[in-house]
Length: 234
Image 1 (cartoon, one colour):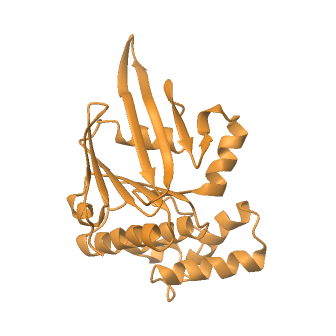
Image 2: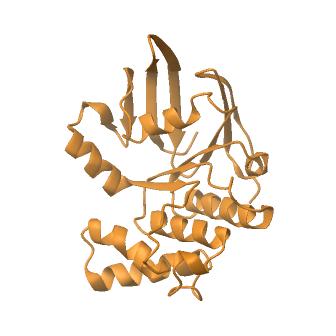
Protein backbone atom coordinates (compact mmCIF):
# COMPACT_ATOMS: atom_id res chain seq x y z
CA UNK A 1 0.00 0.00 0.00
CA UNK A 2 1.53 3.31 -1.07
CA UNK A 3 -0.35 5.52 1.39
CA UNK A 4 1.45 6.48 4.59
CA UNK A 5 0.21 5.05 7.87
CA UNK A 6 -1.46 7.75 10.00
CA UNK A 7 -2.84 5.75 12.94
CA UNK A 8 -1.94 2.30 14.20
CA UNK A 9 -3.83 1.04 17.25
CA UNK A 10 -3.34 -2.30 18.95
CA UNK A 11 -5.38 -4.15 21.56
CA UNK A 12 -7.85 -1.38 22.40
CA UNK A 13 -10.26 -2.31 25.16
CA UNK A 14 -12.71 -0.08 27.00
CA UNK A 15 -15.46 -0.88 29.50
CA UNK A 16 -18.00 1.15 31.45
CA UNK A 17 -19.46 0.40 34.83
CA UNK A 18 -23.24 0.18 34.76
CA UNK A 19 -24.38 -0.39 38.32
CA UNK A 20 -22.36 -3.34 39.59
CA UNK A 21 -21.59 -4.79 36.20
CA UNK A 22 -18.92 -3.71 33.72
CA UNK A 23 -19.89 -3.63 30.07
CA UNK A 24 -17.08 -4.03 27.55
CA UNK A 25 -17.58 -1.60 24.67
CA UNK A 26 -14.26 -2.26 22.89
CA UNK A 27 -12.80 -5.76 22.98
CA UNK A 28 -9.11 -6.01 22.02
CA UNK A 29 -9.50 -4.02 18.78
CA UNK A 30 -6.65 -3.50 16.30
CA UNK A 31 -7.19 -0.60 13.88
CA UNK A 32 -5.17 1.40 11.39
CA UNK A 33 -5.84 4.26 8.96
CA UNK A 34 -3.82 5.84 6.15
CA UNK A 35 -3.26 9.36 4.87
CA UNK A 36 -5.24 10.06 1.71
CA UNK A 37 -7.91 7.47 2.52
CA UNK A 38 -11.50 7.60 3.77
CA UNK A 39 -12.09 4.82 6.28
CA UNK A 40 -15.75 4.21 7.17
CA UNK A 41 -16.51 2.54 10.49
CA UNK A 42 -20.02 1.09 10.31
CA UNK A 43 -22.18 -0.94 12.63
CA UNK A 44 -25.33 -0.85 14.76
CA UNK A 45 -25.83 1.54 17.66
CA UNK A 46 -23.83 0.39 20.68
CA UNK A 47 -21.25 -1.51 18.60
CA UNK A 48 -18.36 0.61 19.93
CA UNK A 49 -17.84 2.89 16.90
CA UNK A 50 -17.89 6.23 18.75
CA UNK A 51 -15.80 4.84 21.61
CA UNK A 52 -13.21 3.71 19.06
CA UNK A 53 -13.04 7.23 17.54
CA UNK A 54 -12.71 8.74 21.03
CA UNK A 55 -9.80 6.41 21.85
CA UNK A 56 -8.05 7.07 18.52
CA UNK A 57 -8.35 10.86 18.80
CA UNK A 58 -7.24 11.33 22.40
CA UNK A 59 -10.72 12.13 23.75
CA UNK A 60 -11.11 9.00 25.91
CA UNK A 61 -8.36 6.81 27.34
CA UNK A 62 -8.77 3.10 26.64
CA UNK A 63 -8.44 0.67 29.56
CA UNK A 64 -5.86 -1.27 27.56
CA UNK A 65 -4.01 -0.93 24.29
CA UNK A 66 -1.89 1.60 22.47
CA UNK A 67 -2.55 4.23 19.80
CA UNK A 68 0.36 5.34 17.62
CA UNK A 69 -0.87 8.53 15.94
CA UNK A 70 1.43 10.25 13.43
CA UNK A 71 4.28 8.15 14.79
CA UNK A 72 3.72 9.13 18.45
CA UNK A 73 2.31 7.04 21.29
CA UNK A 74 -0.79 9.10 22.08
CA UNK A 75 -1.76 7.75 25.50
CA UNK A 76 1.77 7.94 26.89
CA UNK A 77 1.60 11.72 26.66
CA UNK A 78 0.47 14.01 29.50
CA UNK A 79 -3.10 15.27 29.22
CA UNK A 80 -1.98 18.78 28.23
CA UNK A 81 0.17 17.29 25.45
CA UNK A 82 -2.75 15.18 24.19
CA UNK A 83 -4.94 18.31 24.08
CA UNK A 84 -2.20 20.10 22.13
CA UNK A 85 -1.87 17.15 19.75
CA UNK A 86 -5.61 17.32 18.99
CA UNK A 87 -5.43 21.07 18.44
CA UNK A 88 -2.41 20.81 16.14
CA UNK A 89 -3.26 17.71 14.11
CA UNK A 90 -6.93 16.71 14.40
CA UNK A 91 -10.17 17.98 12.89
CA UNK A 92 -13.59 16.93 14.22
CA UNK A 93 -17.01 16.92 12.55
CA UNK A 94 -19.99 15.96 14.69
CA UNK A 95 -23.60 15.15 13.97
CA UNK A 96 -24.77 18.17 16.02
CA UNK A 97 -22.59 20.76 14.16
CA UNK A 98 -21.37 22.34 17.49
CA UNK A 99 -21.59 25.92 16.21
CA UNK A 100 -21.76 29.09 18.35
CA UNK A 101 -25.23 30.68 17.91
CA UNK A 102 -23.92 34.28 18.07
CA UNK A 103 -21.06 33.92 15.58
CA UNK A 104 -21.33 34.17 11.81
CA UNK A 105 -19.82 31.53 9.51
CA UNK A 106 -16.48 33.33 9.15
CA UNK A 107 -16.16 33.88 12.90
CA UNK A 108 -16.93 30.17 13.60
CA UNK A 109 -13.86 29.18 11.59
CA UNK A 110 -11.66 32.06 12.82
CA UNK A 111 -12.32 31.02 16.43
CA UNK A 112 -10.50 27.71 15.96
CA UNK A 113 -7.61 29.31 14.08
CA UNK A 114 -7.05 31.80 16.91
CA UNK A 115 -6.56 28.84 19.28
CA UNK A 116 -3.97 27.60 16.78
CA UNK A 117 -2.12 30.91 17.24
CA UNK A 118 -2.92 32.27 13.76
CA UNK A 119 -2.80 36.07 13.53
CA UNK A 120 -6.09 37.92 13.04
CA UNK A 121 -5.32 38.57 9.36
CA UNK A 122 -4.19 35.00 8.73
CA UNK A 123 -7.25 33.57 10.55
CA UNK A 124 -9.59 35.71 8.42
CA UNK A 125 -7.84 34.70 5.18
CA UNK A 126 -7.88 30.98 6.00
CA UNK A 127 -11.47 31.08 7.27
CA UNK A 128 -12.74 32.65 4.03
CA UNK A 129 -10.69 30.24 1.90
CA UNK A 130 -12.07 27.22 3.81
CA UNK A 131 -15.67 28.45 3.52
CA UNK A 132 -15.23 29.10 -0.21
CA UNK A 133 -13.85 25.56 -0.62
CA UNK A 134 -17.06 24.08 0.87
CA UNK A 135 -19.22 26.31 -1.34
CA UNK A 136 -20.21 28.91 1.26
CA UNK A 137 -18.44 31.97 -0.13
CA UNK A 138 -21.85 33.67 -0.37
CA UNK A 139 -22.81 32.86 3.28
CA UNK A 140 -19.78 34.26 5.15
CA UNK A 141 -21.78 36.66 7.34
CA UNK A 142 -24.70 34.35 8.19
CA UNK A 143 -25.21 33.06 11.74
CA UNK A 144 -26.36 29.44 12.28
CA UNK A 145 -30.02 30.53 12.60
CA UNK A 146 -29.95 31.69 8.96
CA UNK A 147 -28.30 28.51 7.64
CA UNK A 148 -29.84 25.19 6.59
CA UNK A 149 -28.70 21.93 8.22
CA UNK A 150 -26.47 21.14 5.24
CA UNK A 151 -24.92 24.60 5.35
CA UNK A 152 -24.25 24.30 9.09
CA UNK A 153 -22.46 21.01 8.52
CA UNK A 154 -20.41 22.61 5.75
CA UNK A 155 -19.37 25.39 8.17
CA UNK A 156 -18.31 22.66 10.60
CA UNK A 157 -16.29 20.97 7.82
CA UNK A 158 -14.69 24.30 6.85
CA UNK A 159 -13.75 24.83 10.50
CA UNK A 160 -12.13 21.38 10.61
CA UNK A 161 -10.34 21.78 7.24
CA UNK A 162 -9.04 25.29 7.97
CA UNK A 163 -6.44 23.78 10.32
CA UNK A 164 -5.16 21.45 7.55
CA UNK A 165 -5.54 18.48 9.91
CA UNK A 166 -3.63 15.29 9.24
CA UNK A 167 -6.36 13.33 11.04
CA UNK A 168 -10.03 14.10 10.39
CA UNK A 169 -12.64 12.39 12.57
CA UNK A 170 -16.32 12.50 11.58
CA UNK A 171 -19.02 11.05 13.86
CA UNK A 172 -22.33 10.51 12.02
CA UNK A 173 -21.75 13.63 9.86
CA UNK A 174 -24.79 13.09 7.60
CA UNK A 175 -27.38 11.67 9.99
CA UNK A 176 -29.24 14.99 10.45
CA UNK A 177 -29.15 15.88 6.73
CA UNK A 178 -31.34 15.26 3.69
CA UNK A 179 -29.87 13.20 0.86
CA UNK A 180 -28.69 16.18 -1.24
CA UNK A 181 -26.90 17.85 1.69
CA UNK A 182 -25.54 14.47 2.77
CA UNK A 183 -24.06 13.94 -0.69
CA UNK A 184 -22.26 17.32 -0.51
CA UNK A 185 -20.81 16.45 2.90
CA UNK A 186 -19.62 13.03 1.71
CA UNK A 187 -17.84 14.59 -1.27
CA UNK A 188 -16.12 17.14 0.99
CA UNK A 189 -14.83 14.37 3.27
CA UNK A 190 -13.57 12.54 0.19
CA UNK A 191 -11.81 15.71 -0.98
CA UNK A 192 -10.21 16.18 2.46
CA UNK A 193 -8.50 12.82 1.96
CA UNK A 194 -7.64 13.08 -1.72
CA UNK A 195 -6.65 16.76 -2.00
CA UNK A 196 -5.52 17.55 1.55
CA UNK A 197 -3.96 14.14 2.29
CA UNK A 198 -5.84 13.72 5.57
CA UNK A 199 -6.60 10.33 7.06
CA UNK A 200 -10.41 10.57 7.26
CA UNK A 201 -12.07 8.26 9.78
CA UNK A 202 -15.85 8.42 9.62
CA UNK A 203 -18.31 6.65 11.93
CA UNK A 204 -21.69 6.25 10.28
CA UNK A 205 -24.93 4.30 9.92
CA UNK A 206 -25.45 5.90 6.51
CA UNK A 207 -25.09 3.42 3.58
CA UNK A 208 -24.87 6.37 1.11
CA UNK A 209 -21.36 7.05 2.37
CA UNK A 210 -20.03 3.63 1.38
CA UNK A 211 -19.58 4.64 -2.28
CA UNK A 212 -16.99 7.27 -1.26
CA UNK A 213 -14.98 5.08 1.10
CA UNK A 214 -11.58 3.56 0.37
CA UNK A 215 -12.13 1.09 3.15
CA UNK A 216 -15.15 -0.11 5.12
CA UNK A 217 -14.84 -1.58 8.59
CA UNK A 218 -17.88 -3.23 10.19
CA UNK A 219 -18.09 -3.35 13.98
CA UNK A 220 -20.46 -5.25 16.19
CA UNK A 221 -20.45 -5.87 19.92
CA UNK A 222 -17.11 -4.11 20.44
CA UNK A 223 -15.20 -6.04 17.77
CA UNK A 224 -14.25 -5.58 14.12
CA UNK A 225 -16.11 -8.22 12.10
CA UNK A 226 -15.08 -7.20 8.61
CA UNK A 227 -12.42 -4.95 7.06
CA UNK A 228 -12.45 -4.50 3.30
CA UNK A 229 -10.64 -2.27 0.85
CA UNK A 230 -12.81 -0.93 -1.97
CA UNK A 231 -12.44 1.41 -4.93
CA UNK A 232 -14.34 4.63 -4.18
CA UNK A 233 -16.16 6.90 -6.60
CA UNK A 234 -14.01 9.81 -7.72
